[in-house]
Image (cartoon, rainbow, N blue to C red; front, side):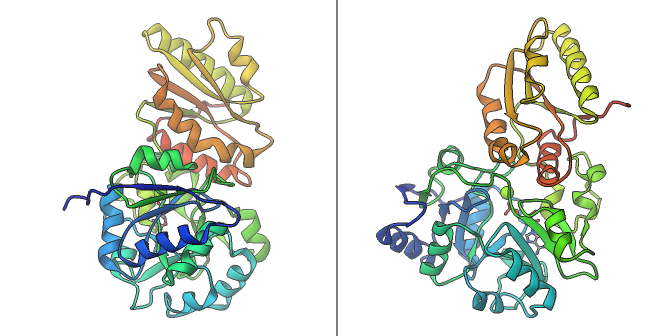
Length: 367
Ligand code: AMP
Ligand code: MG
């Protein structure tokens, strides 16, 4: 089945106090089975009525999303949670009270009323309460929970500005609410509460450290751990979070991630750049602020040098990560080299996204 063609309306919405008439228009579209892109604190989402199987199918078609990759359902009050899951455990309540609204998604047992199109056939459902005035007001005005993956074509970097949604989805969805750039830049943390131990399926905006401060037993699932995160992981690897087995966030041009100690990373990037150039390639480097002068002074310097942010401000780095990856496709370069970052705090989510973006092309030199 083909995606439906649509005339895409575009509204600039006040991100703090969204205009009532715009909310009315957007929520009516949602109730009528349409697709609306809207800002959240993490990235832009592509929303549909989560209780309408046909509307949900349109999300997959518009994005070109594999049908076995389930969607997160967004709510803006506690009562809605009861209509989505059969069991709100004490742990779920504790985490919800501590981190909602916010960038934490909880995987819970599915309520029979949640269409299997939303959960990709799973008996679990992923739920989140986003922390953004536009997202919350839209969900409340719609009066239904909203299923919403990131508002990008499948495989592309997630959208952190409305212009990214335009690039990917114009003509495929009914409305874009432009509430300006997002505040976080990486997606929510997906935490599975259906097993014996609470398990992070995807690192994101709420860090492992923040979760462990509330629940010390929280562990990192294998699909989000360093060794298996590359897109080159064999297809047969059991993926507890189906979406984690797909390559994601990738620019069209090849990207090589260089991991390890900072000194080793820098040496390796300079060496790899020289080798690639000897083969006639134009090379771009995505660097930390701290390493910028080192690459800048290389002779000859790289064909393109982009600062991603400081190694000491991972929140800032997260904010511009996807924008930087999108911009790779706009410059006249054949291949990009990107520095790895420390894996504490938001660094875990940043490295997860970079490992997927490079489609398994990772250099990890021995120290
Ligand atoms: P996206 O909305 O594109 O940011 O992706 C949603 C993520 O949540 C994907 O990695 C999905 O695999 C994951 N997810 C959604 N629902 C479930 C579920 N029921 N069980 C496990 N993972 C889920
Ligand atoms: Mg996504």
